[in-house]
Image (cartoon, rainbow, N blue to C red; front, side):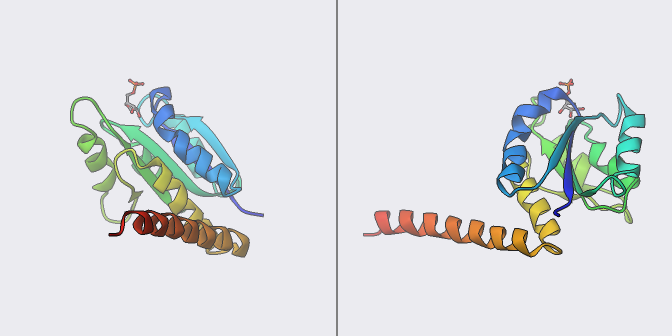
Length: 161
Ligand code: RP5
């Protein structure tokens, strides 16, 4: 049985950006629990989720946040599970603020950070982590890559002169 992924976001305003992550996990057959938890507004809930994530059947945590995006780092502080950060695009700095807040973690507490608004890649990376101990999921990922390559080859064939 494949482990669950927690998809945590700092605000409901992040939800539309994170929809591709949720649907990609679903497409791979990975059970996901989606939560709105803020490192600043609901820090106790962040601690509660991360500290008990492993015993509650989660294998990976995906954390999306914008601006002073401390959510991924705070969750990583309370768990030994891998945490994947999704920096959310912002109106002020285009998401560079979120990216640096997430990626510049101090030594000892890593966060695996994808691109700004990289929700889909966060799901694929989570699937790759879970696939290390799940052969069926590993086969699904291989098929996903083969399909993607075939799609590109088809476009190449069409445009080639
Ligand atoms: C962050 O601040 C959230 O993750 C969101 O990206 C951003 C704005 O949040 P709201 O003010 O829309 O709730 O904490």
